[in-house]
Length: 267
Length: 267
Image (cartoon, rainbow over the protein chains, first blue to last red):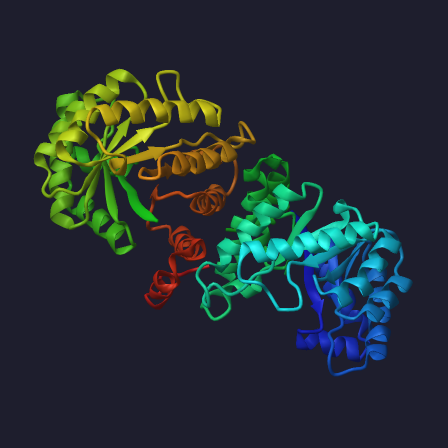
């Protein structure tokens, strides 16, 4: 499974502060810790809301430069705002990257997807439209179908797309884990070239021992066909489960035994 | 998921010794520990090989009496030998129990299945015939189909059957976890009334940190439709994952939160 490190995100207060104060050392250490723990991509998110989009764009340019100086790993440019994404791309060194994200909202898709087309980048596509996250598998697949049609029209290949089936709390609706997992299965079956990605934490909202629930869900998602996960790679237990899951879904035991020899498998 | 406690098994040296010396206290404590940890059934196995089948039958009668005195939970009568199973049944108090096991070997099935028919018990059916464990999903399903036909002829209902799809080491053949998981899915789809059960430990044979692999496999099996597992219920991490998995496959959060309040959820 592809590991997208989630740690450099301004929703965490310490990260927000480091971005505001342009604390290069903090960001460098965090990025390098993610890579050392096994991240394949580093997600970067400067947050939104309090500052102007120009401030956000400046912060993103700074963040991209700092993280790219800290590591060779490719980045996931994570923003709701097309101008912020464009600013990041203009600063970006190298060709391999992912833009996060578009939805089935025409306005957002029309603004962001052309950037992915122009740069040949990966693109996370959330299985939702203007009405929020749909409750059912069918509605999420409808959103994916609409997105796939639009992205194809814009010259984006299925191989560039990372569909995010989205996750709602199982404490609110007991069928929601299955909805996400079945959506992953259906996306993989309908669009064999496309990839799937999820973030985990919503699933356990409102329940105790959330990390345990997140990890259990992640193993099920691996079996359902998940290609990539946005996760804290410093969670050694989750990373160990991913190695074991990769082995069990037929990818061979080499990755697992290599991680074991490196002392990275904990139970 | 139904938890079948595996601990009272003579393949463990201390248990073999306790059975040989008729150490009632040891067996009582072990059975009660399994129940306290969440076992729904207690598997009892007196081993085979060194002793005569008459010795085994005597040991099994003693074991059934001791475990039934220790707990109200039903038992799984686990033996290769029909006479040993019959001896256990003659000693058994109550109606709810499972016999472990038959295979697609005609001789074994003809000797054991009538006991399950007579007693109305559950019956574990291994997806294999005389040639050992088949490599492919198709061959395992062929064995299940043959068994289903024979058991139906003998008056056994699908609801009594626990199909064990069997597990081969993933270190030997990287596709074997998927073979078992797909077999579970197919059994559940072909025989909606029948149940599925597995033992875990084979999957991780030859690899380090085996418990982690076993637990990861168990979570995938839960998603694939597994109904019951033969497991050490004193493995609190595995039991916690089962609670989380049951919740994620749509059974509601009550079992999980109840276990959490009892201090039984560990991560």
